[in-house]
Amino acid sequence: MNKYIDLIKQTFDFPTKEFKVEDNKLQFNGINLLDIIEEYGTPLKLTYLPKISENIQNAKTYFGNAMETHDYKGSYTYCYCTKSSHFSFVVDEALKNGAHIETSSTFDIPLIKSLYAKGKISKDIFIVCNGFKRDLYKQYICELLNEGFVNCTPILDNITEIDYYLEHVKVPFKVGIRIAADEEPTFGFYTSRLGVRYNDIIRLYEEKIKNNPNVSLKMLHFFINSGIRDTAYYWSELTRFIQKYVELKKLAPDLDTMDIGGGWPIKTNVFFDYDYQYMAEQIIKNIKWMCAKNNTIEPNIFTEFGSYTVGESGAVLYSILDEKLQNDKELWYIIDGSFITQLPDTWGLNQKYIMLAINNWDKEYHNISLGGLTCDSMDYYNSESHQFNIYLPKREKDNQQYIGFFHTGAYQESLGGYGGIQHCLIPAPKHVIIDRNKDGTIQHRLFAPEQESKDMMKILGY
Image (spheres, rainbow, N blue to C red):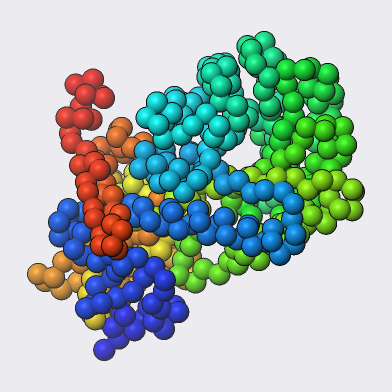
């Protein structure tokens, strides 16, 4: 008999750091998921907080090691990109690990003020304010600066943005400039819509910053959509960015920081192979070499990791409600949730996550497709990133099958419209927070119950 556990062990190097099987039940970071399901039911989203701390500390170690290896003189600062997940328990965990903050839009700033009011941050925390900014966003940034948040740094996205700050900020302040990098060759546009063109950066500095005693240029900011990957495209764009920093530094003595953005990948399949330490060392090595070549002081380095911070902390657990054989070979398992509403990246971007059975690892397996509860034909999941098919244990009468999607902690709640109206009025699932006590024992609590019909009716005006 071909068992599901045999398939997984033959396909992957299994067990892994995050996943192992005991008594034919899957454990995720040492958590018996069937115990969680038996207490809370499905569908269920969970967040494992210690993974957030682990990844932040790992990144600090990678860059710290790289700087020590190459005798790098600048410092490293880890920022959390809030748009990946704005939930308080995520931000709190990041702050506990010394993370600073990167904002993306207007209402990130009231979030900052709430954290300060509760004593969770001080006014010297670094706040990197990104994005195209409407007046209210700029107004909120000015308020932070005028209230003494000395390390709040608006990142200029266009050449006129600074005019608002010059008019409304009453204290000396610092700004950054985001560079509009070239997109990768397969992208729909040649140059990113975000940031200032390379050819306009020097003019922006000389005309609006250089001779103004109230403002100084602190940071040059870089980000590309493909993320930090070992490709010719990435290294080419990074080199171009470093060269612009070196050029600008000769004109702007206060410029001392380089923000290399986010984009460290997370494990979206069990085959994951990415050498974080190697990439950190190559980045530091390249920056140091080009600065030395141009007799430029090595800059401080900022990163703003979002998915890397929170992605691997998340999981979504489902029950299989039924199976349907639609022709001679297409067998469907129907889940008690929806991919479109609860894992929208699988639908909108064809994103693949780690998908594994929770129980019945000693049973025979077969090839299936997974269908969601909405009446949309696109509400399905039928392949993994490493193969064209997905396999799960065969269903048996009176033996409920559960499955899990893992490392789903970034973006899914906000993209799915958490707490709002879902496609076909599918409710947002309950959400459970899992942490560990100092003695290593697991504690868990219900953060939010499953969304109820009355909540939706109120939003819809009934």
